Image (cartoon, rainbow, N blue to C red; front, side, top):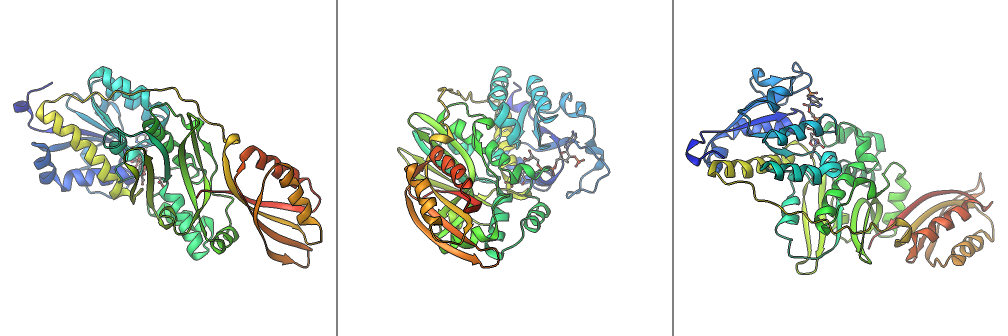
Length: 435
Ligand code: NAP
Ligand code: HSE
């Protein structure tokens, strides 16, 4: 560790100059004096790894800084802090390992790497006496990792409910408000820089599952892996579901939920009906919100822009500053003891929830009685049934049915049995309700 008096600058190596990397480079270059004031000495951008050096960039910087060789960042003895903003697992993971192994501090926004390999990287960083920070990996500019590690650490957390994917929330908001087609709304989200390089990660709930795994690991002091998270995406939602949900007093959101259930941890990402008057229902566009229940603090809500260049830059640069300040002051990284309490993951089959079902059935007497019998035999109580629309040509009617709390495995069994009823043409939607 160099002495405080030796520090004339803190040197940054950037991996990636895309949506977030450009914002970070721009902030480091344009806010030079302000950032130096916060650290005690200037930050210098030394090298920037890209794939295509000739590509037009959203930031104007000396093209001499660009390189296509990772070695020029990772093997560069001058670089103090590596900032990984490439995304994906390969080569981001090996680069992260190399950076830490060679004694460089690491800041990353990479939720896939942190969700899959976070504990391994945290241990590696600690063994090398360097710091690993990843605030931007969840919730863009919203402080979440810091609060879970610090401000909320005295609590026993019982539940986390979040809207943690900006792309899908943007898509759902536009579908709900304007009846917009899914693909048009997705294209707009991509143009605004919200979407992942592969937007299927957003749309199919993978991005939210990575983020939930990171948050749940911190919230419940237990290792939650992405594959532990039950996951459904938003592709099957239609304009009708938004309309009918609205008539029933609900919004539809892609929720990420982590809860304590009988000592185990329940982790799931799926579309859910939420009451229109709830705070989560009011989160629209690329905004994210995370609602946490702690035994001491009660309910707290974190809200802000969860995607996009500038909000994510805010979190990344804050992490860089936190490390740089300590480097300047000659203070080593604060060890962050991670505890794995080895809790079990609660299976989705044992979830108890209320459900919204939309189905197309034959428009004739006795059909509702058949459906009620299937549900009743499985101890599923109906809260309401509404016949929405009838199609005289095909002789079918559309039913929307809301249940009282029921076991997921019973509901799934009921869906299978109802599908076998000759009178049921289609079970078009099945959405859980979160009060
Ligand atoms: P992006 O726009 O696709 O940028 C990726 C950058 O990495 C590009 O500059 C690309 O180079 C470079 N790159 C990728 N693979 C490379 C390789 N093998 N070798 C060298 N360079 C490589 O991605 P982004 O949206 O900025 O996201 C970056 C990270 O931030 C991801 O982990 C993402 O999940 C996370 N994140 C993004 C947001 C957001 O709103 N976008 C928010 C929070 C977190 P070229 O430019 O030359 O192709
Ligand atoms: N694709 C992500 C989102 C970026 O839409 O939320 C932020 O992690």
